[in-house]
Each structure stands twice: as C-alpha cells, then as structure tokens.
Image (cartoon, rainbow, N blue to C red):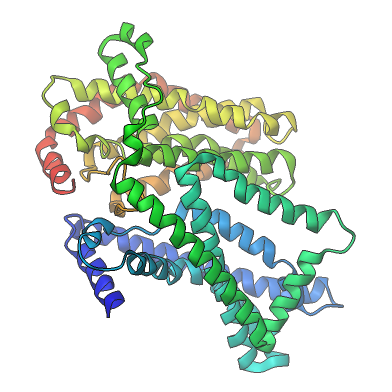
Length: 495
C-alpha cells in the first residue's frame, strides 16, 4: 500500500508541474524516437540471427550471441550515462513523517528496476530468439530466454546506479567501473580460453532451457547490488539534506585576473563559479568529459569506430557535447537568481557574451582529448579544426536560441533528494538538431566535394558564425527581453 501511494504521489507531481502542459509535444516526440529505435533494434536482432547462421555454421546462432553478452551489457552500461539519471524523488517531505527511510529508498530502487530503459534490449533479443530458439525450444524457450535477458538488464541497471551514484559524489570512483571492465578484458583476451565468453554462453543457454539455478543466481546478484545501493544512498541523502559539505570550504577561487575585462569579466567569473561550485553542473561536466574521453580513446586506439559514419559521429560528438550539456539549459540555471540580474541594465547581454566566450574556449578540452586519434591518423588536424569551429559557430548559434524560450528553473545542487524534470519540446528539438545537422551536412559535403573540401567548407561556415557572433547574440538578447516577464514568471513557478 505504501509503494502504491508513493507511486500515486509521483504521478500527481508530474501532472501538477507547471511545465506539464508545455511538455506534451516533447513527450510525443520522445515516443516517436522510442518507436524508431525499437524498429532499429528489431532489424539488428533479425540481421544477427540470419548472419550468425551463415558465418558460424558449426555453432547455433543463440550460442554465438550469448558469447557476446558481456559486450552487449557493457554497451548498455555506457548508454545509460547520457540517457538515464539516478532515481530521484522528493525524499525530504517523507523523512518528516513516520515512515521508515529504508522503505522510501526501496521504492526509489524498485522504480529504477522497473524503468522502461531495462526492456530496450528485448526489442533485439526477442526477434533474434523467435528465429533461432523456436526450432529447438519452442515458445517456452523464447519466454525463458527473454526473462533471463531482462533480469540481466535489471542487474546492469543497479550496477550502473551504484557506479553513477559514487561517481556523482566523488570523481575518483570512476576507477571502479574502469577496473572491473579492464579486468574482464584481461580475462577475455589474455588467456587462450575465453572463460567469460564460455560463462555467458552457458548462462544464456541455461536461460533458454529454463534452468532455475540461473535465475536464482541472477536474482541473488540483483539483491546484493540493491542492498549496496540502498546503504550508499541512505548516507548520501542525509548528507545532502543536512548540507554537511557546506561547512568545509577548502579553497575559494576569485578569478581576480578577470577584473580587467569589466562587466564581461564579471559574468565570466560568475559562469566559472556556477560550473565548479554547484553539484549539478559539476556532475554534468564530469559525466560528459568521461564519455568524450572514452569515445576519443576508442577512436584512437581501436578499430571499433573506423567506419566513416561512426568516425565522423564520434568526432563531431566530442566537440559539440561539452557546450551542449550546459547550453541546453541556458538561462535555466540563472533562473535561481534572475531577478537580481534583471536589476542591472544590459546585464543579460553581457552574460550571454561571457557564456559564448567561455564555451568557445571550452572546445580546447575535446581538442586535447582527440590528439591520440590525430596521432594515430584516425582524424586529421584540418578535420579537428573544422569540427571545433563548426561547433562554436552554427551549433552554438542553435543552442543560444534556447535562451529566449527556456523558462524553467534548474536547481543547482539537487542530487539524490531532488527531482529532475524533462526538457521542453523546443529544447529537445534543438538538441537533436545540434547533433543531426552537422552529421547530415558533413555527409552531404563529403558526397558532393570530397572529405578535404567538405572540411574546409565546414571550417568556413564555423568562422562566419563565430565572427558574426556579436550580431546574433544581440538578436537573442533583444528577443529574450521582449518576453522577459513571461520567462520570469516561469522561472518563479518552477523554483
């Protein structure tokens, strides 16, 4: 009954949110995207079933797939970082009433385990099983196999949640998943016999046969990770609510060297303090830095992304992601203190210019990350410069348009005890365009003019937008001021 009541509160909170009506189109767009990717996974499942039968005739296709389960769920672990947040709920009000805190956290963990993200891979495995498993084990084999894959996805969900929670709290915990996957890689590639692949093949086969021990072992592992997550979250929730860390100030950076740049320098300093002193911003930057570093490492030192499409996608993603992670919420962080900013004439214009300068210089970080790929010959110096300037040109131009329409305050320090809302429809469309347009344009230029000339054209377009940034930022500022009262009302309603 308690879980049912808490779930009802969660649904009501979403419906009563001031942005609920404005997000209806955004939800429709998300559903459309989900259907598209479901179809894509069904295609992959069917293709794998047919290709494995032809390429590995001496082994059943489901055994080939099961040998690679570790790769599937390693990819699933990485995919959760940009798409799945740690479970959030308004914990604080429930802690003030006589309800055991463990039950509150159990509800959060149960909701995470039932998250729709955990059924994503079934769109690939179910059609694969229909083609490969049915002839030996019938419909029962499909059901038992799908149930086993779902349990592995739930297990991976709690493993991801444990790592993400620890990394959000202290960045050095990134060593935990790195060490685990490095150890698995060493076991897989160093010995002559691949014990990991043999284990996953036998586990998958046990699921197909409906072996009860395989399910019990997986459920036991889920229970262990559940208890580990609950123990860690209890401590973090209370530390966050009691503001334990606020009493320990190790170092205060004033960035006094920026004083010489006048008002632009002041807002430059404000942006730096916002990024490096607030939990939400720091967590976002850390997460995207780790993802970009991983992608650049895979591009430079492996052949995973040697295909033309994946190579260009990874390169463009590296330069776009750093600015995008914050700029999609442009002015939403400032919604916490916008009333103070509005008391000064032209302050918003200076703030927007300071943001553009800061995030333009920020592409130096992915540029450094991509040096190994350039050294290994996977990315040319011209390509790196063209992607970098295209990011701070047309891509930032698109992202800055959100400053006019974003009117929802984003909490600066919310973590485990806060609620994370979904973005507006316009925000999601601009985000997709920021990734999609560079890919489409670059592919079209390559097809028409070749890779080198296409990169020079990208560089020229980027420089044109960068050199005219003062004009389009001024246009954004004027449009923001034209609807400032509507935006300020939205910021106050969502604080």
